[in-house]
Length: 216
Length: 216
Image (tube, rainbow over all chains, first blue to last red; front, side):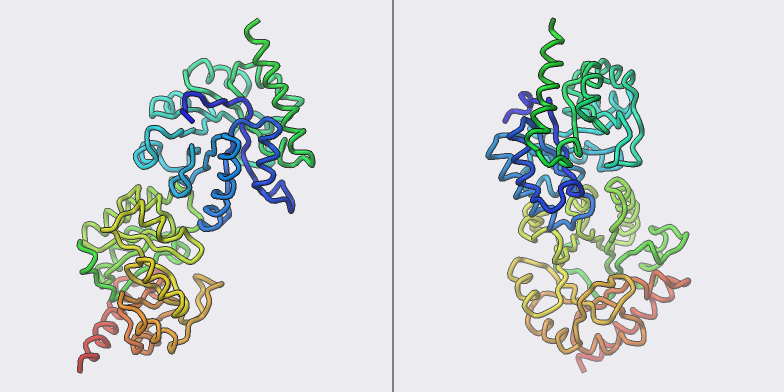
């Protein structure tokens, strides 16, 4: 899929800590059925072999649904499974190195927490930004918080898509989306739920409604 | 350096847990001054950015001394710093994936603990084997032990270079080398010593002496 046509509305980031004994590729399929438009595979403790095997299994699901698969941090895993995208944090490889090996037609997203990092990432060739954490989160306990005001300034400062991440749930999603961003990124709000498809559907409805209301 | 000319006599694997407050690139320089012929950078807890920065700094040292630099596990870091080699364990990326992106002119080594794994790795295109652990070790506490008999069978079964690893010190190095292997690989026997160059020199002398005695 041409990267210019990606839909950033509802971006799922995985974390196997939330899914109990459920099989991650199945959870991803349910989330996509519910309305997730992008999937990022994030594995911070798996061995390379395990990450690779899991990425292959998740890619089978995302390919079936024609939803992009983004790998967190690991350029080698992204190359190995021919993922659609790579997401880099500020502690990961520099984007120019990743771009050199991953290619111009692939998507590279960058985590930012302020306007300065956002402008820098856009200048260095990022395809989208993940801005956060907007709220305190159990997934990344060390994440710097980004106010909704800063989130709006980030969105206004760059011309690439911006998704917000960090503690976003259905009750606070509307105010996050009121900043004008392109979509929301969630982990536990979908994966910690028993009804994954239902949780995704609720969030997707909120995003679609807020975005539809913007033109009016 | 043409990979066919590599000298596997004394292979240093890094572990920053052993060096206290000393700066790793300086420790590597001292080890090479003492007689280390290959350096593997192994980082299991660093962020990708930190691993990359450290690899660049260590590469500056190894390049200066014309000693090959091998990256442990991470194909992306090996690509990013244009390392000479990549070392893969049985839990790391499959060698065929690594070879595809790293190239034919680069060295890929594989960890093995028996003849079956050794033959498989050679068949899949490994350039050398790291066999171990030959003795219990504080560095890799979960490593499977390889008897000296099995080490000798591994060496006899393959035509690529074999280095032994795991708990090798100056007192047991001669018996390990008596199996006919090409060199020894150490971590703490060099890096935990106050006199790094001296420790490397002692080990290198043992290797040279045993190998010189083989022809007689």
